[in-house]
Length: 81
Picture 1 (cartoon, one colour):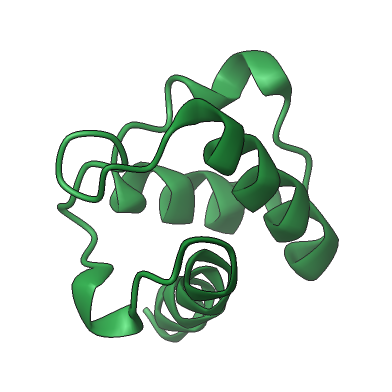
Picture 2 (tube, rainbow, N blue to C red; picture 1 turned 30 degrees about the vertical axis):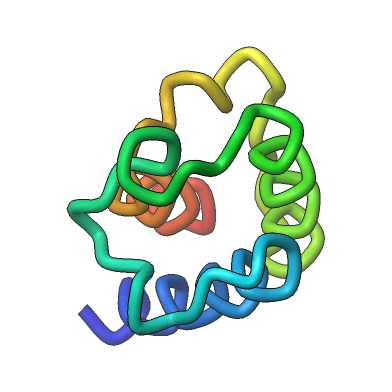
């Protein structure tokens, strides 16, 4: 659980830097597109920054399937193993 929380915190920093959406608004159940209004180009920027920060691979074709913040956190956590 600690790893998941640290990934969420790190992802929140990235999202805040790129979009201005604060960590308080970045909840695991929130949809990137529907709730947070993040477009695909910003999602690519977020994915690239997450790859650098966490040392994981997020292929472009996978970005569209990361619908919620929780999906992204889960992918990063599972990719780090």
